[in-house]
Structure formats: C-alpha cells, structure tokens
Length: 140
Image (cartoon, rainbow, N blue to C red; front, side, top):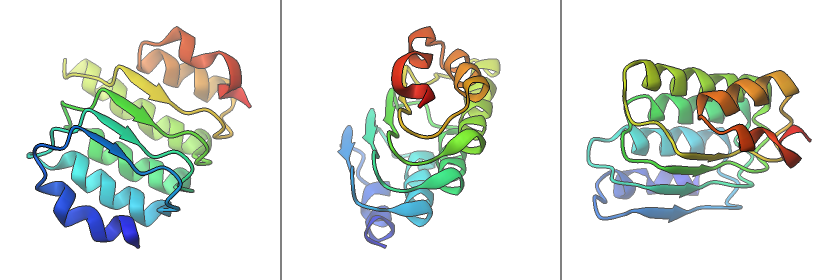
C-alpha cells in the first residue's frame, strides 16, 4: 500500500533520477504503481532499486508494461522478488520489443535470487544484451 500511495508524487517528480525502494514489501500492487510511474511521460528515472519487495510474476508483468515505452531507465534492480520464469519472460518480451523498435533498452538488469530457470535466464540475458547477467547466482 505504501508504494501505491507514492505513485502520484513519483509520477510528477521529473527531477527524480534514482529511486531506492528495497525491502518495502510492495508486492504486485506496488509494482503496478511503479509500472505506472515508469510509463509516465514526465519520468526521468535512471535507476530503480526494487529488491526484496515480493512482487512475484504478476508484479514483474506490471513493471514490464511500464517499461514498454520508457526511454530513461538504465538500471533496474529486482533481486529477491520471486518473479520466476513467467516474470522473466514478460521482461524479456518488452526488452525485445524495445530493441526491435530501436528504442533505448535497459543497460543493467539485476534479477538474482528470483527462481529463474536456465532457459528463461539465458533469454532474458540476451534480451538485455548482457552475457554476464546469466552467470552466477541468477540461476539459483
């Protein structure tokens, strides 16, 4: 609920470049609110830290929808959110769509400890053009 309450203020905060919201247990409702912030035309957010918010695959899909037309975000941290393969695929699809439309795509995506299978992790890593992303604890 707290992240949902922040949505109106964040949507109009055009000077906000970095946002740390780790460990707020925003769950899928909070992720949906942040997705709306990402899709706001006034958003100039460059880095978003959402680790340990229990967003799950539904929240990851909401974030992915918000990213679809976002051209400012460079780094997205989603560690420990249990997004699973379904959430990873939603993010992958948006990144591939952005790339095919020659839009700016995330440069860094951190999804450690999200229960991704090897195939989902590999295709997500390729979508963000980061071969190093699929190494290490990503597959845990």
